[in-house]
Length: 104
Image (cartoon, rainbow, N blue to C red; front, side, top):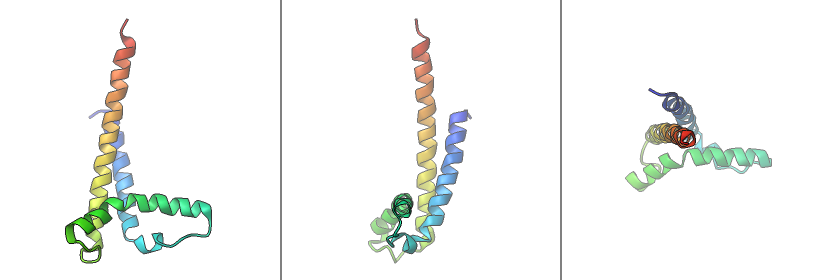
């Protein structure tokens, strides 16, 4: 396994675990913080849980009918796959650019 895919896998596990943990605190993310920096952080956190919330809405047509662990698991799997694929594609792009630059 190449370094880029290992790095992407590690980043995917980290981002996926964060998104899964944030899924259980969705009620806290719905409030509006008085501080601008906190609002930005809440918006970024809410962005991480959108795939799981979308799955709940599409699968059950009601976000409260499925348990929260289903959304947390789907968030983890989505972000794991996304980060791994991003790391893989970034590694391939670097390899291609090195090949392109080494041509006379």
